Image (tube, rainbow, N blue to C red; front, side):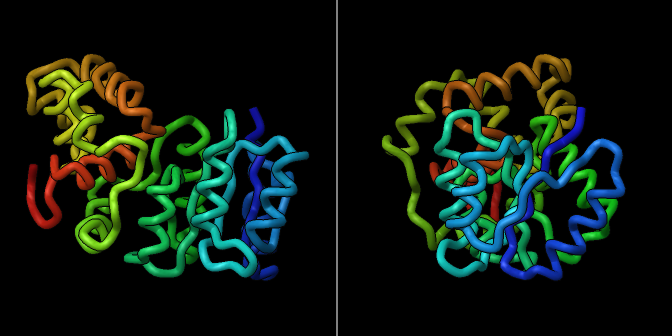
Amino acid sequence: MTIRVMLVDDQVLLRTGFRMVLAAQPDMEVVAEAGDGVEALQVLRATEVDVVLMDVRMPKLDGVETTRRICLEPDPPKVLILTTFDLDEYAFSGLKAGASGFMLKDVPPGELLSAIRAVHSGDAVVAPSTTRRLLDRFAPMLPAAGPQPPQARLSRLTEREREVMILVAQGLSNGEIAARLVLSEATVKTHVGRILTKLGLRDRVQVVVLAYETGLVRAGGNG
């Protein structure tokens, strides 16, 4: 299956570089490009895209708001935020807006390609520990979002699911959570899936964000 990729960046030279890297892959195709968020939204209405590589700082409409609007659409493409700085408030906002992860613009080509494949398969490409660094810095500054108070959303979870959610937010993999709770890895995967469904979340990244917003895990410490 060919992964259809869209490049959204106001720097033509960067788009050219990314396109060259992706064009050399037998399982990827750059099907669209845009220089700002407004153009990106217009192009997406007429183009089938699987993964969007999204710059954050652009004219007309920035990558965060563009990501938010894309993720509100039915069956949206996955969004991978591209940022210049590792600890960037835009990256955090992009995760809250629905992006499946973020990468640095100077990432080695092999890591970028792996990230695109991971996002396409439904995984989040930001290690939870990396996401925690973002959250440690920016979570206290940003208000919680959503139609319900975050704590009310957590009431839908069983006690075991809350335990699993805390460990996901602390950066543990499914295998590590399984060892910690003496469960099979398949059981942990099932719990994570139920957490996503009950809370209306897209992936593990958003699990981490919500864990911070609710105080289930505190910035600079454990839950």
